[in-house]
Image (cartoon, rainbow, N blue to C red; front, side):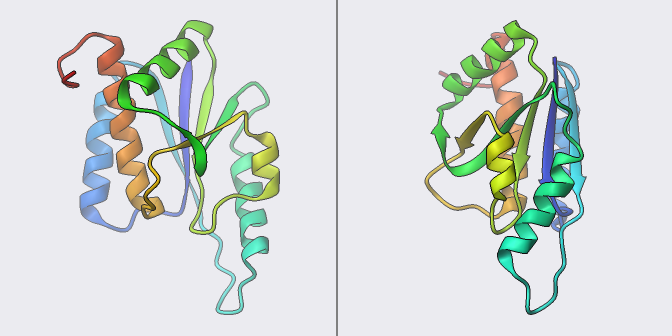
Length: 156
């Protein structure tokens, strides 16, 4: 099994980069994990949000193969607690499924991305910046794998 996390645009804040790198390093002990940054689309001051989402979606889809299951991080997705997410990941591990999780840009996803996706996951009913979501999500991946392996990181 291989996991990809695809996000739009670089992470600007140093503290977020450091946190993301910390958990990416820890994840290497559990799974083949790839973090892919897709360049954000700059359309200028008169940008059309739908055009931006389409261009971002096209760039994301170029990074996904046909045998990968795509899961969008979307505010209208299914919510899990950490143990529930670890159970979700355990089922994927058991099936040997290659998974791609996608964090969209500031305006969300194109219709093509929704059509390609197999599922949607919401981290919270709260809204977070798409840069902060990266850190929160890689930490939750790490937490899920420590739960799966019965390690003490997650306190029940």
